[in-house]
Length: 212
Image 1 (cartoon, helix red, strand yellow):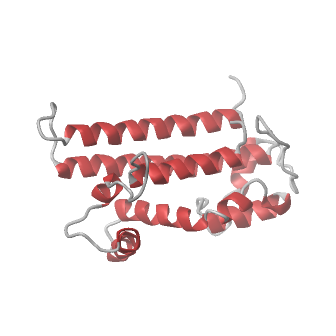
Image 2: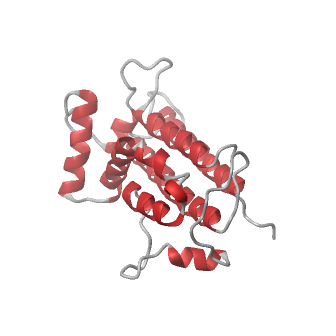
Image 3: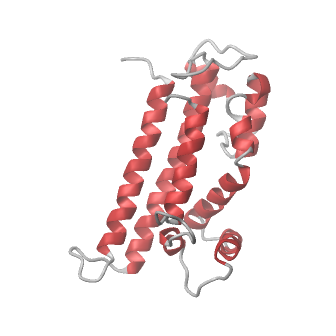
């Protein structure tokens, strides 16, 4: 079996985003009056939410896979390999190093990835600079993800705060899926919030793996 490369990681993430966009597009078309097959708006919202959730999970997988491959010396198609402080002899050990002693799994949100990157790579490259400069957007995307994945009051209150900030109001009976399907004001061509978040994740991924 061929060794997995950073280019494979990049392609896998892009493929995930293509699939998620396709799911959401199909759901929105099927919810139109007269569409065949036809689905309810409630079902459309659920499909759009699942598409976003899959994309966000793909993003976390992208971060984990790219981090481990950089740590074992893989190089992106363009640019130089990051300067490493540690040299795990194989991928399995590198994956073990990602998990803190007091946990059974590693977290891949911005603070944890940046702290980890600055411990293993000089200046945390290529992760810290691109994640920290987009932290507000990534935190927002994570809040949307949490509102889909969790039923807690806190998760939904944080999501509602994002909606108020973005829309200036909180529409009645708004679901996460209906918010993601909305068109952002002033975008030409029209851009949904789903595409806004997925597009930004894709841009950041291309900076982490240049040429991928």
